[in-house]
Length: 205
Ligand SMILES: C[S@@+](CC[C@H](N)C(=O)[O-])C[C@H]1O[C@@H](n2cnc3c(N)ncnc32)[C@H](O)[C@@H]1O
Image (cartoon, rainbow, N blue to C red; front, top):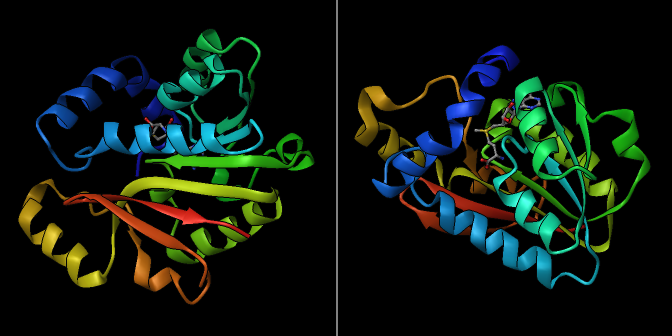
């Protein structure tokens, strides 16, 4: 699992490396652009425009929303990612903090129309995901939605098939979403598969 200093080192080359993997339809970023575009359109279609981005990185998605007039809040633990994101979104409310210990206090003092997490929450264990998402649900406005775009599968069998296909490329440190296994905790959750290794999870109150 990468720590915040390793993400600091990746920050300046992040967009290029993701774009390259995406163009070549490579795990783990196959479907990345499509995921970001779909979430972008959903967020703009929401009635309100207050957005929280968890693990925003270089803010590829949130910068687009910011330019459309969204009020952007966010948390990331990489100092360099925050610097890059803040430059693109001077008025965004960005906080440094490790989400495995929860949200920065300031972020818990607001309610959000949309909460986004793309390619970030696979750093949490499955029980941690359930706890964290339950806390995020409390911060949603009544018609709000949490959008998780990530390496994700409908079933454990599909994950295992992908793991075999990726062989040594598979990142054993990352804990990917299996939709079927989250249904007990969140029966209202929905899943949209996007590529052979990715998808979007939708979670409302
Ligand atoms: C793969 S990048 C994804 C960035 C962006 N959301 C995207 O879709 O391109 C993961 C981001 O999550 C942040 N991150 C990873 N683990 C974290 C943690 N435990 N607490 C806070 N941020 C974390 C990293 O610093 C990085 O910016």
